[in-house]
Image (cartoon, rainbow, N blue to C red; front, side, top):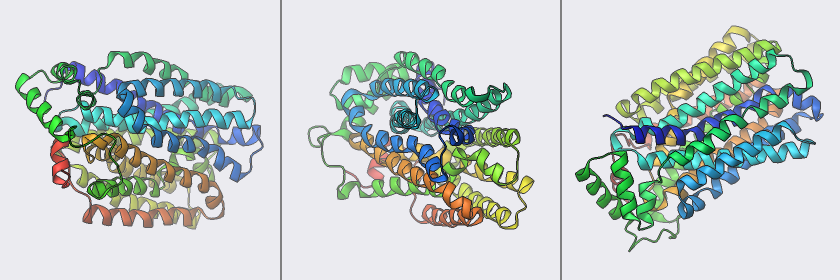
Length: 444
């Protein structure tokens, strides 16, 4: 279907929250050695330093839903841009380890909140037939941000800046954060949020800008009003109740499996893992860029087919790729082969992630909750994702130091569990309006 300029522009700008999300989470991968030396960190302290941002993401994901319901999706995105900027500048110029942890924590709050609000906003402005690929633009920007972080680190390292190198790596993020802040003022508010606030005329005007077909707009407005049903369902009603049990369990499951694959261990410790496998410093940073390019390429492929293949099929393909590649990574560490086999295995792993879980998770979570509790549902899914990410990233340096093979074998076993969940429990949501998905899940 043809998409108009307002819809595309709003989607791209909102998805910049995802680009900064990806950059912020991955940029630390090129600084772990420097941080260890500057702050004299043990392996446990390094794990905590990396996961400090993730502790922030847990809080950000947990608290983002309420402000998004009260103040609107766009207002929260503006606040997220400010958090990214403050974190970038502060992480570049900390006065001690504790201040560095604080500013990384601030950035983590922004990442966690962005993982809730960016995909939710895009889902709420998108037509059903294009919703999958439009929401997946957030994931595309996440992996683009990861690639830009790897590439930025590689370029900065090439200037041989010495003691200032790691500071520049963190400070670069301030530029896109400032751009995100100003561009947000070009986007409209979510029409579904406006309907929930009984501001129907404003919602209608925005929907006409997003998809200017009067008959279709009026029909969709009626469906949104029926879904929200503000006379019978308060937006403050309890979230954890039986009628929402199915989407709650689905969101928790897909978010937990996302991290049990070990994806964030690879993203946060890419250069470190390749050094464990025998690569030199600059070579490890270059291999990180290769991983980022593969991630971006396969995300683009998934973006092109997610509304045609469906969410379940991508998850099935990705699950099989996870199991095979993680098995090969474990074998590489057990046998000490490393080198080309390790790089090839990680290439397949990141391709499987980008084409499966990476492309699907934020689309799927943004779709399965009713309008009246979508912000809280998105927050729950993001909270689960980030608390699992914190556990994985914090424990990885300590566990991998004892046995890299056991670590990746465990991730492979978890991915077998994901494959079984997709086969048995995951519903298909492609091409179905948000309000119809609600009905299919049996929610009145």
